[in-house]
Length: 321
Image (cartoon, rainbow, N blue to C red; front, side, top):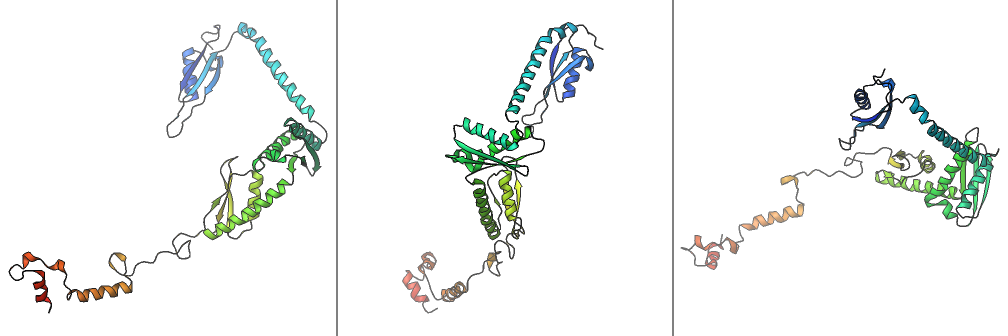
């Protein structure tokens, strides 16, 4: 029981390392029990990254209001209820617009409304086949509808799926295509997969493709699932998830039969260097003729002042050696 049960509502905020510590500190300061308090968690604690950006828990604790206070808040509560009802009426109205018995008709109507709002004159046809609504779009400037790498077309497909499945008993898959874009894109991705697989098998190095949506990643995986030289897997998080093509049996670099031939170890020579045969032959000739050849740099006048006056006399005296 609270020590001050009839007081007006009092609120305080407390910070601590954990939510429970902050709540206990607030209850102690207000001198009330947990049953007599209204607790609101303002901020969850965060450790941050390597100690940087750490945050403490923040809670707001208030004493429960008296009967008079509760009556004073009756009107705001009624207003909130009215707002919730209005939101519910809005959602119900939206559902009624696309609540036709046929999912294909719901999808066709929704896509037509969006394209009309975009200022595009497009003929939309939709048909239901085995729980799949296939929608085809025909008109001018369809590049705007397709978008970069089909991004706009995929977004329209996702939104249509949400609308159709709101009123459908079972899950209905949506497929939107225009100017045979899906088939052309699939063929292009299959050709790209084969080309990159050949490159990976030849070089032994893995290759990471650009981010793709799940539909396009499945095309790459399916095309290369039976390839004997490469394997595929996905990395990253949506919407930046990518396909990686890697060699199935990578070989260690530098070993025999690996990506490159290993260097041969030197057989002889100082410091592991072996001179070619022609260099060794030239060196031997130079050594044999070194004793017979005398160079001017070998003559040091200060050592032969007593015997020779110049280099010519020194050379004449040693020419017979």
